[in-house]
Length: 212
Image 1 (cartoon, rainbow, N blue to C red):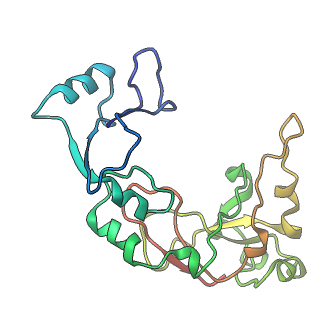
Image 2: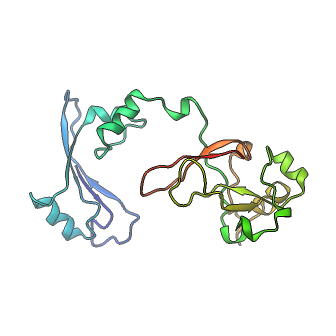
């Protein structure tokens, strides 16, 4: 397989269209090891082609296809290390011991988020245990988990969100066509003790304990 990524065709610009070229056959070969050329870092069609045809500069990976089925969804993750495959094969999946949910997406962070020191402390409640308690407090601002720099196992407690009256403003954030912009999803999990991590990272995943 040649993993071409974006800009594989000069006629198609941008990063949206991701491409790959592969050879496959409708049968299973025991212990078969495939070869995978990773060309996603080359910025143009010509550079991808030159790298692919070069025996010295083509970034080539090998992987046994049987390992893909050890990862949920069986992705063609040819770049995954043996340690990572072993973690999926022998470890316990997070979903079997805990619920993982994506939280609140405000759609307008400039409007709804502040760093905690920008707000009068009397108008922040840091320790609500549930939505009912947040409403009864009469406060406007509450802690908000928003990723940030690499840090484990605690920290990045910088932001607060306007969740006054059970998020009334956020729940009524519509665009000019009347479509709801915000996504106050999985609200049953708000204010609960949790382990948090960033959705997107370029490095090692860091889990952080969040008491509220």
